[in-house]
Image: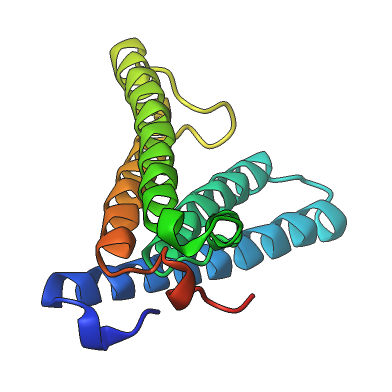
Length: 168
């Protein structure tokens, strides 16, 4: 979670929502993998849907975790790059890097939107669990949009400035 002194009520709610989403996803992964192993070795009947659902939960938790990291500059490469420039250039590099991160996230969100709409139009479902593909891709789209919001919040709070870099 982040320092709540500089976070609005919505920001605190979003911090908690991200935290609990990731916690519940990790618990779900452990339970699903355990059930899959139990089913395979004790009952000789594999549950293919449990592996598939655990994979989706892992993907979603990773994407939401990456978005959460954007809020407080937990991605080590940005301050590392900014530190390489003289102090007079650091703010410009900070702005450039943040804009580049947002641009990449916008491209990923756009691509995810396309695949979400395509999945919605086709009615395709995942093979083992039967989850609609648009739901799987839609969560990815939401995570990319969340990462854009969190990057903007982090930039606004000064999290990407070298003086505020988080020790890795």
